[in-house]
Amino acid sequence: MAIENSIIVPAYHEHDNIRPLTTRLFAALESEASSTELIFVDDNSNDGSVEEVDALKAEGFNVSIIVRTTERGLSSAVVRGFMEAKGKYLVCMDADLQHPPERVPALLHKLHSYAFVLGTRYAPGVEMDKDWPLYRRIISSGARTLAVPLTPVSDPMTGFFGIQKEYVTKAADHINAQGFKIALDILVKTGIPSSSIAELPFSFGVRTVGESKLTGKVMIFYLEQLKELYIYKFGLPAIVGVLLALVVLGLFALVLLVKMVV
Ligand SMILES: Nc1nc2c(ncn2[C@@H]2O[C@H](COP(=O)(O)OP(=O)(O)O[C@H]3O[C@H](CO)[C@@H](O)[C@H](O)[C@@H]3O)[C@@H](O)[C@H]2O)c(=O)[nH]1
Ligand SMILES: [Mg+2]
Image (cartoon, rainbow, N blue to C red; front, top):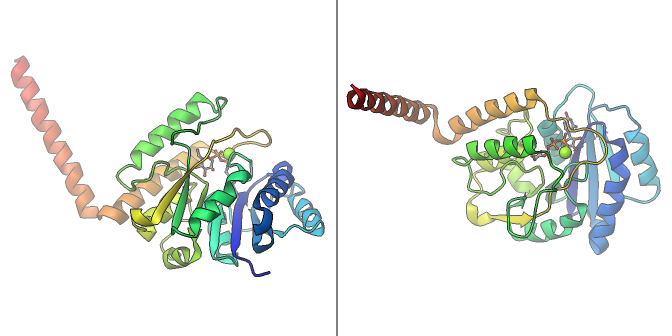
């Protein structure tokens, strides 16, 4: 059967999550399983992930693994997976089961009618796992606030989303594959209108096996990515103009304050 759907999973040291993700995903897909491929994009983890994928393939699952040896990084791994995908409908999700495979069919269903479907953790009826650490919640909401001027979506930080392949192809030359926030980059660079974007609430789980790869370096990458996206969206002169206006307003307020006090 022709492949309609491609599920792309960036994976680094995720050996223990590969089997549960694959079996849960294909079980959830039911009749759509035969038209779906699952692609892991691994950065030379050397942890038995390749052998696990081979075993799953031998059991009949349509799963493959791309092993990159000269590149590293979440977003560039996703871009690589998108480029290799055969399907018209592309889904990106994490390997660590924080994105429930059982929500993929609903996401694919919406993707038939919308160019972009965003898995959101900020919607009525869904919740963060209570065990998600407070410091991660604070970082996430700060990062989310900084992205507000860039996109109207409720969860620009999400790593769980779907996109029709034609839109990736159009944006391919502009996507910044450096950082962790590929959904945000695609949303800004493709300029997909709000009317073509749907949201799908999901409950964000806690990683139970393996470790998060979020580091200070990743946060710096995020700030650099934001700078690039602001310039991309609003243009450098507009950004400089707003900054200058803020400085002038600040000085004006300071002068008023000094006059009131003196
Ligand atoms: N190939 C590859 N995969 C990577 C790399 N770094 C991380 N990954 C994979 O990318 C996924 C997310 O990485 P985590 O380490 O689990 O990230 P997180 O801190 O839990 O962040 C997640 O939550 C965010 C929301 O707060 C998401 O926005 C983000 O995309 C990610 O899903 C996992 O499948 C992980 O193996 C890398 O350098 N290379
Ligand atoms: Mg994670």
